[in-house]
Image (cartoon, rainbow, N blue to C red; front, side, top):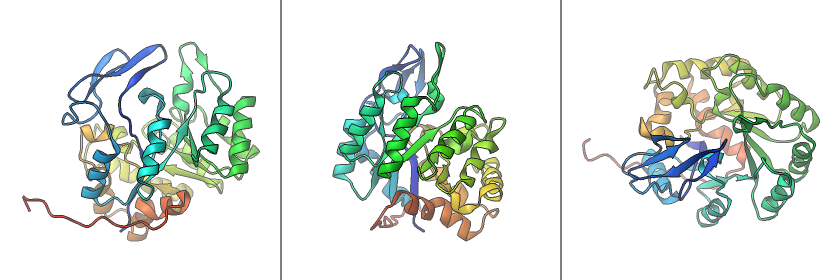
Length: 305
């Protein structure tokens, strides 16, 4: 089965801030995250470097053919590194550019990213809710950017705030730009009230849902994440199996589980059909992002087997 990760992250170093608070790489995989020391990546990443090479090693081990690399403000803007990653590994990665939406002029920035070859633009929309106020996604400059993206066939990758808080803005964007391809992340923040409203956005022809972070959201019940499986099944009932894509949210999620565990709970469940599993784990992302010529990494048995 061809497996594609529709939501992952890469960075060389975290050294940024969000909402006036710092995010900075420490040691042994830890970071200062908004004033708190947290295990940001697995402890064997002692230098905190979350590189493409380490990810490819994890992908090969888990037999994942390719990955979409999204972005987040808490990691800092990674456009230069991600452009280099896609240049060096074009068959393994599809990367998203990201702009500074907190300052005027980001639409021009998006145009430059598109001109430089980025085929998707990321908005971590849940991070637009600041102590100082909320940045709306339907402002004139945002809407102008979406119009340019629709015209040029650029994908919008977006993570929304809990539940249906930003669904109204998304509906306006979709109505104004029906041909804009959109991937909504974090499976609608599935453990929060009103998450189904985010999923229902995929009833529009060019909107997809990806599950990046779903194991984090169901971390309290842990593997084999039966609640996550039920949510996937419910979402298939809401929008159809052809509208959903698997995403891991690598590397943060693998502080608790292995990379392979972030999808094999789907493979092993009896609640989904083989066709549903194949669509969710790879076929939908292959079509939506336009991956071509993908290979399935060969299986290498564990020494302990």
